[in-house]
Image 1: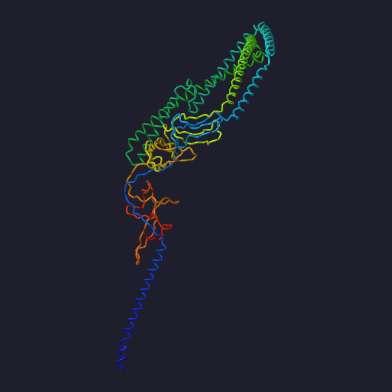
Image 2 (image 1 turned 45 degrees about the vertical axis):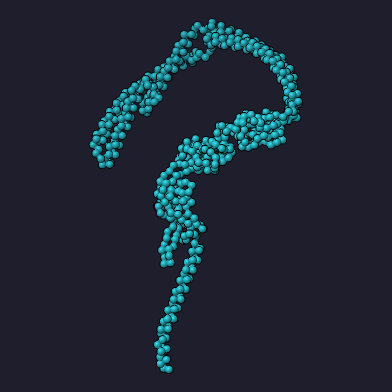
Length: 565
C-alpha cells in the first residue's frame, strides 16, 4: 500500500506539467483564432481597391467636343399672300429635287378681298383729294422785289454823296492803313522771335522757326547722340569692370566718347549763346518799332480818322450787293413760277397715274373674287428638307417660312467650343474622327479657328467643314488628334483626381507586420502632360511600375488602410 502511494506521488509532477502544457496550447490556439477573426473582420470593413501599374509608352492626345450641324446655305419656302395649307407633300430629312411640289395651298378669299376693297377705297379717296388744289400766289415775292429796289436806290444815293467828300482824307487814310499793316507784320515777327527764343531756352526745336535758330537743332541733336553713345560705352565699361574682365579697351572707348560729348556740348552751348543774344536784341528792336506804330495809329483814330465811317469802296460794294439781292429775288420768282408750272404738269400726270392704279386695283379685286383654284408651291433648289413649320388646314402668312431646305451641294458646318490651350494643339486641315456616326461616310475637316466673342472667355471656336450623310440640326461628337509622344509614366485616366491643391493619383504603399502585409493609400501630386480617352501621361514622384488605385468599393483618401481585390 505504501509503495502504491509512493508511485502516485512520483507521477503527480509529470501530470501537472502535462496539464499546464495542454492549457497553454489551448490558450495560444484560442488567441490565434481570435486574432485571425479580428483581422478578417477588420479586412471586411476596409475599402476594397483595384490597381494598375504605371507603364511607359506612346500616347496620342485628342481634343474632344460636340456641335450642331448647320447648313452652309439654306432656302426658305415662303408665299406672297395668306394661303391655307391643303396638302404637305414632304417630310423632314427628305431629299428633293428642283421643281418638286412641296405644298398645295388655297386662297384666303375673304381676307384678301376685304383688303383689296379697302385699298381701292383708299386710292379713290386719295384721288379725290388730289383734285382739290390751291392756286399759286406770288404777292409776297413781288413785295420783296419792290422793297429790294427801294433799298438799292438809297444805296446809290449814299455812294454818290461819299464820292463828293472823299478826296481830302484819302492820303491820311492810306498812311493809317500802311501803319496798321506794318504793326501786324511787326507783331507776327515778334511772335516768331519769341517762339525761337523760348525754343533756345528750353532746348526744344520741334516747333521753332528754322530761319532764326540756325544750326542749333542739328548741334543739339549731335550733343544728345554723343551723350547716348557715351552712356552706352560707359555702361559697357562698368559691366566689364564689375564682371572682372579686361576693361582697358572699353575704358578707352568710353574716354573717347566723353571727349566727343564735351566737344559737341561746347559747340552747342557756344552757338546757343550767340543766337540767344541775337534774338534778344531783335525782340527789343521790334518792341520799340511796335510802340512807335501804336502811337501813330492811336493818334489817327483819336482825331476821328478811325476809318470806321463808310468809304466809297464800302458804299459801292453795298450797291453791288443790293443789286445782286434784287436780281436773286427776280430770278427766284421766275424759277418758282417755272417750278410751279412743272409741278402743275406733274400733278396732272400723278392724277392720271392714280386713275390707272384705281383701274388696276379694281381689276385685281374682280380677279380675287373669281380666283378659287388651288396653287402648287414648288422647290426652287435641290436639297434636303431641314424643317416644316406648318400643318394641314393652317393659314400661312407672307414672310414666315413654310419650310426650310438645306442646299446640300453647299455643304455643312459644325462649330465646337474648346479650351484655348487645347485649341493651340490642333491645326487647320486636320481631319476629325466622328464618334457618334457609325457606318456612314461622313467626314469633318478643321477649316478655321476663331475667338469666342463672349466677354472674358478664353475659349476658342473650332469650325469644321462636314460632308457626307448628315442632317442640319443634328449633333456630332468629334475627336481631333493632336499628335503623339512617348512618356515615362502612363496611368489610367480614371486614376487621376483633382482638388484645390492640384491634380494627384493614389498609390499603394505596403507595410510588413507579423500577421502579413498591410496596404495603405498614398497621395502623389502629378502634372498631366497629355491625355487620350483611357490614359494620361503624368510627371511627378511616380515612375514605371508604380501601382495606382483605379477603383475602390468606397471613398478612399491618403493615409487610409485598404485591402487588395
